[in-house]
Image (cartoon, rainbow, N blue to C red; front, top):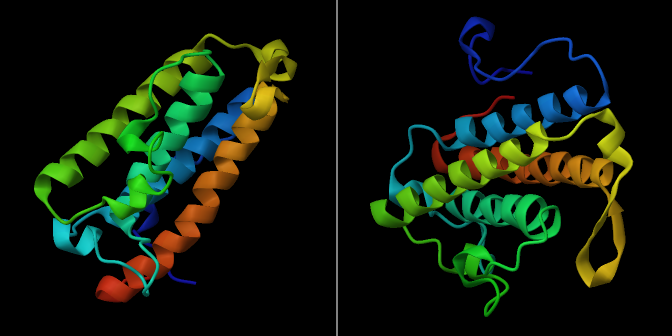
Length: 178
């Protein structure tokens, strides 16, 4: 298996976290960085390049989608905020993908939103201790969701979409690797 970068240049976390919370956060940050790496060095047009019709899946769409997912779980659910979902998803469920266009403005908006939502999530996560991982949040449809499940879900969400990102990047410029 090839690697994306030489190990000494890889910015992704690779430590020995102590405790359940630290482990979840390290995995989450690893996958957040992986998505960023998969998008590096591409033009707006390349980032917006779609996979195969009729799919609207693109790297830019994934960035927009993951900004929404960060906001949904860490702000709207965890902090019980009623703010509108990002990118018009309240009106069009696929807006994060469908409206990902190859302009610098759209790229800047997507990456700014992702960075902002990650900062908001991290600020909330910093307030938690190990005992809070079992605390239940009110999830979608009023279902109780423990904080730990939200963290595991976010790791899964990024990992799944990083698999999509692997294939999209390979189609764009042939680059492969972890």
